[in-house]
Image (cartoon, rainbow, N blue to C red; front, side):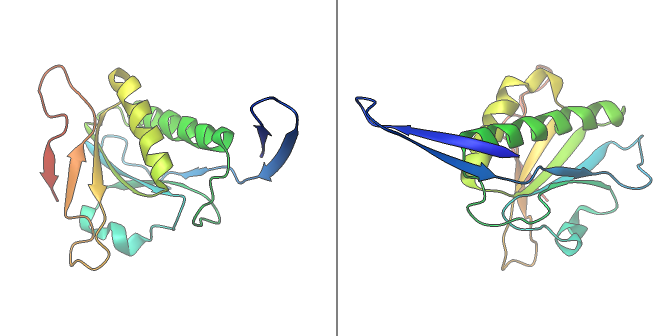
Length: 168
């Protein structure tokens, strides 16, 4: 992919173009998905690769990975890239809800830049009626439990769990 940022001074006297090439996000489903599952784990790896060992405390549920082949710090370099990644992540979350017909919850773990967290949060709020319940977990590198708690991100008209703390 290629993105362009244009910079203008206040009176428009000059313009400098900066072109960035960037990788597309990839999505991996389990080889044999359990399509009747009530829960799945979605791992988003943009800054660092989330390894299988870090996911083991979620038990034996299907893991869908959304990732860059070569994750790194400061990898998002343009608004176009940020928006494209956000769109692909939200579309993937919607697709998971369709593919897994009995799904109730998406457990979300991520290694992403803060700008991506903000954009995903805004998009979840705007697409709330098309998404299953999403619980985003906090990572603790030095802890015995890597994901000790999460927060319910999605709203539901049947109950008021939005913002509720969930212990893992």
